[in-house]
Amino acid sequence: MLRADGPAPASRDQAQVVIDAAAIDARVIATSALGGGAKSVVTRVELESGEPLALKVFTRGGNTAREHSAYRLLGDHQLPIPRMLHGAAETPEFPFGYTLLTMAPGAPLNINLAGLDRSRLVEVYRGVGEFQAALHRTAGPGFAILSDERVDRDNAEFMARTFNVELGTFLAHGGSPRLAGRLEAYFDDASARFAQAPAAVLCHGDLHPENIFVAGSLDELAFLGVIDLEEAFTGDPVMDLARTLQSCPFPGDDLTAAVLEGYGGKPEGFDALFDAYFVLYELKLWNYYARGGSRGPLRSIGRRIRRRIRGRHAGG
Image 1 (cartoon, rainbow, N blue to C red):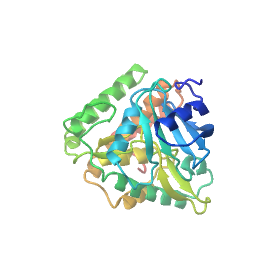
Image 2: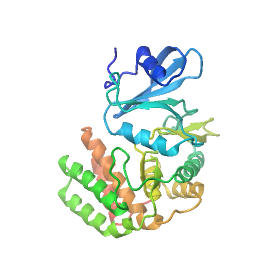
Image 3: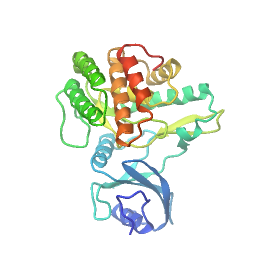
Image 4: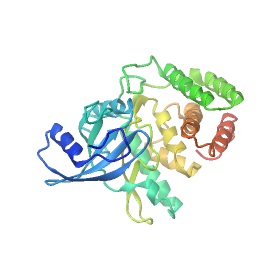
């Protein structure tokens, strides 16, 4: 039996256990790797009697709860995102839990970027903005990361907690104490603006090109939908938009304009808070590379953080 906490996809026997638990009357005839990252491994499950499904097995705690909580908030949704058929927080087969999902149509945007015309990329991100507007109509219970029972009093408390975790990671992995001090002052200055954020809504939290699905040729590439709710949270929609734009490998004012056009305009607080959220996600990116031992990108990310703190940046 393959271990669920390893990088291999689920075996046919493991997938059958999940199919049975979901009360789906079907036999698994094959499994194959679909993808995965540091927190989960996704397996394509072929059924003798129907369409293939996706089995997402988590390799660490916390993200299972986030994804399942997000799907509970969505309920019987009509969004272009896979439907959750069954999920478990932990089982003997899968210690960190799993989610059984319908398959997403299309292919991830990241495998279509080479040679993609800028105008098509802009059109795709206009569709992403439309998706985020629809997602953000789902109200949340408060400002929360959804992996535990804690709900913060307001966005200022939520952001303080989030920033303190990221700043601690930054310093623990050799980040510049001088830059850390500048970041601390920057976020202290923004705290009053954070507190003015409107009621919390469901946010995707990780709309990078691997999670954005498209279809068509390079000349006609169109947005289809998204996958992956394991970084979902309930909070300020501006924060979610900042993450989407920060994670695009080709940022620019035209891309920002397209997302906002698809969204239906700037949400409340966009001009006041966008840069602060963008800086937070750049800090998270620095920490991601540092934790993985990849020192190469850290210098350029640090420069981007300094420029945005000074209010001097291009695009986004």
